[in-house]
Image (cartoon, rainbow, N blue to C red; front, side, top):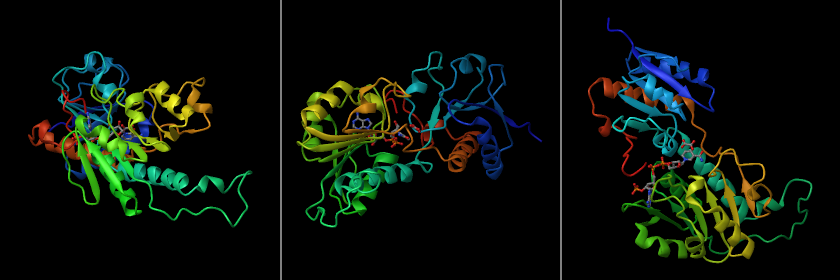
Length: 317
Ligand code: NDP
Ligand code: OXD
């Protein structure tokens, strides 16, 4: 019987132990004999690693890695780790159950804001039957990023009757969504968006993308939800446009520095809702299944670049 494939697990900010059972079960389910061990700094002679924000020593101590599985969708911090071998293949999660949760989060805030639902409930709740009920054309929702998550959000929002547009790097075609592609069309996309949802990865091209100029291209009174990455928005520019009244509100789930520092203005700004990076928690079992399928495919000789979630390092996502 061949010896089991050794797999190092290094998951910061997650309950690592709780992942071991689902990972073992998922590998057994795809016929891979695997031995998962928590990486604690000593060599495990691992062939693969399952990571979320791993310590940089992992890559020094484990020179035999053939691929790394990122237990999340965003890879910008993994790619920035010192010592990450330049040709080590990285596979990230593709949806794995995060997309519906993120669509739910966006639809919740969309309804809360556009229908004024924040007025009801709590000690200051409006107790009046004669309140405004929006009956006009719903605002146009624009989704930045039409990947596994953004496309799901766009289609979920569209099902609630909102006109939806989306923006991506390469051209897309999505039922019910007006699609825009490339930097040259971003201005046009923003000008027709009353409710902007950011579902972009952080890369060299998207860092600081939403600065004062770009955000000013949104119509007056526009709202923003950011579930992508904090670094895509220039915080001071967003705050200035909220203060000037050009933007009406921002719901922010992701930040340049996380946890968001206690002194940050976002915490206390009356037009900002802060949530602590919880719009898309990684569901363990589907994530473990996706990772196990990847390991099985690699063990069967499939090239990493042919697998879903293969990270193109030049693109940065
Ligand atoms: P994908 O790689 O599937 O999609 C990324 C999308 O962004 C693609 O449509 C891509 O365009 C587009 N894009 C990237 N760069 C540019 C650019 N320069 N110009 C225009 N469009 C661009 O990623 P996912 O959808 O799986 O995830 C997106 C991000 O969501 C993650 O990277 C992560 O940062 C964030 N996330 C946040 C979570 C949370 O809890 N808040 C949870 C999970 C993810 P194209 O299709 O042409 O390549
Ligand atoms: C992710 C995230 O990228 O949790 O998966 O943000």
